[in-house]
Amino acid sequence: MDLRVLKYLDEVVACGSYARAAERLHVTQPALSKAIRLLEEELDVVLLERGRRGVGLKITAAGEVVIKHARQLLQGREQMLQALVAQRGLQGGELSIGLPPLGSAEIFAPVIARYRERYPAITLRLRERGGDELAQAVRSGEIELAATILPLSHDDLDMAFVRDEAMVVALPRSHPLATRRQLALADLADTPLVLFENGFVLNRLIHQACLGAGFTPREVAYIGQPSFGLALVLAGAGAMLLPAVVAAHHMVDGVTMVPLEGDALRWRLVLVWRRGASLSYAARALLEMLPGKAEGV
Image (cartoon, rainbow, N blue to C red; front, side, top):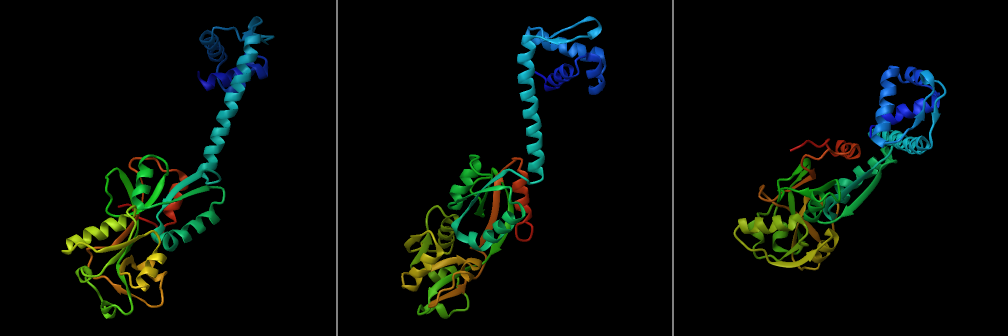
């Protein structure tokens, strides 16, 4: 059923004649009359009882039913269009985004704060999980955007680059390696490692990088928060690998941060979304606010 024809019917009923309605609708009277007749044929009812030359139109009982629902449909269409205008102007809508525990406080918290200040009418729904789980949530359509690190394990996601960080090694100040200016990954072959939980992409990358350096990491603990991991380091449980930006925000007395040399292990943060998906205006606005105005990769 064509909403345009329902609008025609509404106008004819409001005007009480085809002539006045045709003038207001900027269509010819024959075209208007034909449209109403075809609607009657489609519904198999008489909507309007016509006098001579269209004078003295009277709506039938069936016409009353149709016009009632037609006006609801037309009102719904208008509300839909107004909502889309508001969404384009970021005066309404919703954005679901997934952020990992590692690095979100340092990278995304300031962005989210500015976003909320600039677009208070947008409802933000945040989910905190590991990068692998968040990427899967994007694929399934549960959330629109998610932060994770490269490389991606699937090629069905588009992305925007956010940050490329070197890694540092957190060591107890008394550790023999703590006085070094830089460390190679192979230097940690005999040192137990405090690693992140399995849902963290970084955990997998560390394990792969250690194997590439010729050793299997001695995994002593799995943690979900950097602060607890550094507490274990301070207690002498082992060393911990962290992105430099995260380490700078979690300095602990008694723990030394030594830069990791080379590019075999880096923390390359991206925001991802479903490949080919049409991003909402709310999501596009967030991408525009990323540090350095994120560029697609």
